Length: 452
Image (cartoon, rainbow, N blue to C red; front, side, top):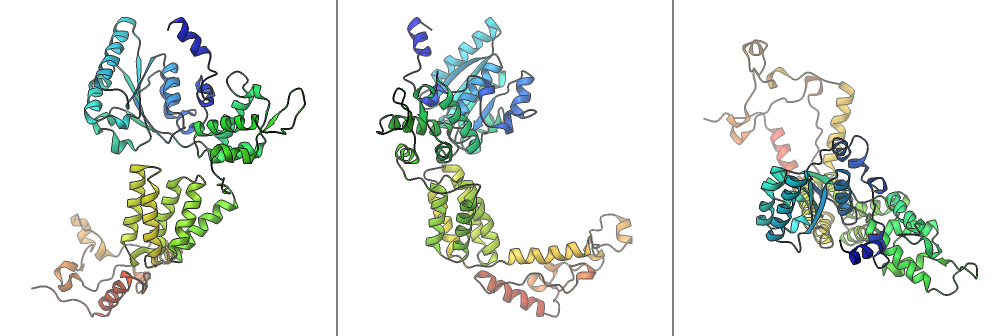
């Protein structure tokens, strides 16, 4: 590092706030307690001074790049960063050659960080394999895409996948409060008045992204600095950041949606009830309200998968297939295009025939299980794998349905105490209507005719 580079590194005034406020130690790192807390994966690895190769998978702004730098520092290793967008095989070979030289001459490990590793093609990923396997480099890859789809299986088998979660609003508040209090790297010298309600608003609108939160705060602070009539003493006026200024910084109108309060549950309820009521317009509206307010799309998709079984079921078995396909499609493409398979699935679910027999059938069965406990399995349904079991009469008298015409024979499958129970009562909706007619016809048959 020459003199000019050193001076530029110290003078960070021209850098974005998010860059200036990057944590310098793991103690400053906010969030991801599920991997960094006491006894968790990365904490155990660092305590053992045995940092493995990692694939850091998580949404933007969760600290993947920062975490990689801090892990390298904690492991006392060189940190070399490459961007998969810019780097090629030649860059990889040069980085690996330098890593081998440092290992052999200085006994120094190298952490090779590859941002957006999912953008590497198969040849580039294959080029990493022998060097990761031999330990020449410790690979840390960062990706916003599902590594199961985007990273070669061979490379995945040599690295641990670590899932980073979107930051909670409480974590983002910590990030914002630090930036407002720090006079050296943050905005502490600007005499800003940012009320709690505004800090909470920024944290909510950041949608789990620390970079977005700090960028919004920085933009709002710049607007507030020019706002007339800001309150404060004449010699040192304070610039007030208001919700309106935050909206201007976000370039959007903020939506009322408290993830932990009544509005959250109200919108979710309206979404489910609109689908249940076969109203595709209302269903898509409430889904958009959730997504645009920062709800985790996977939360919405999980509700859709549950709904497909709870409220549609066998009236249209394809509904569950559509809901699960939408979830997988979203994992594959992410946002912003992910709203397309989600909308397609919601329209299908809302307009599908409805039946709640999956819910009512299980509830009826559970009632008898709770009431009667562990009733014995009838002997004819038991498998007789040994002579002793055969001598006990296990499997005796069992009628194999495929030996009979229509692959059906009247048989008793419930415990003796529950015989005659009819838990499943098919609805008259969609495909379940035909299922009910067939089931009633079978139950009315006297028995079955053996083939041949």
